[in-house]
Image (tube, rainbow, N blue to C red):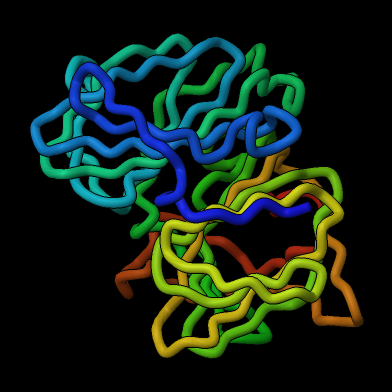
Amino acid sequence: MPVLFNESTVESKQTALNANFSYLVDTNITSDNNILLSRIEIPEKSIFELSTREDEINWLLVLDGELSFKNTQLKSKLTDTHLVYLPWNFEDEIQALSHTVVLHAVVPSASRFDPALLNSPPELRIVDWAEEPVLNSEHDARKRIYLVTPKMFGTTAMCGEMIIYPPHTKASNHYHVGAEHFQYVTKGEGLCYFNGEAKRIRAGDVIYNYENEPHYFENDTQEDMVFVEFFVPGEFDTIWLDNEPVCAWLPTGKNIKGGDPVRHIAAHSSEPRNSPQDV
């Protein structure tokens, strides 16, 4: 069965350096360890100690605030449009330049999903999703921005995107075979349908879907609903139910700010198992 809860219901623990840390997705929530997700809240001028292990995928998504790495050569200021992909055996401290909230995701034993990682370990990479291309849904008003793809991060162990639902937008009913995934609602509210049953969702909600579980979303409000979603592994089959249209995505040639994106992605469908080559 799908799992749905709000982050406010999860107990947080304060670290020795004043950050608040809470597990959102772990083996207590799901029946496996395909994806581990935590929320880190760091007060202004406080720090959080961060370390990674070999054969893990680690990324950070800044939800609010500004931060920097304290000790590495990376001096960039990271804001709420940044996603950071971390290398193995990485150790540093995150320093909050203002009150900052971060999602931290881990895929343990990632080589079980992508054996090539053992020969090509991840490198430190930063993506500013506000500079990435926006794609429009062919059949409705939804927008899509890719966050994690094989081309961007060099692995098929996971993939991820941001989906924007304008008011009164509804997607097609579908399920996935070969991957589990979660959504984290970053803005707004709406409805999530599990096996046809509607559940109200809102910002801060976590939805975890096992494979073969039918689901779709609807924004029944006057404001945008936005969520990020991540799949493990990153290649899978999507099955569309009830003769609903296959979701196709068309390039706008723009980023979310209306400017030129950092790269181009051609039109493609969500139906194929493998990611399009230019994604």
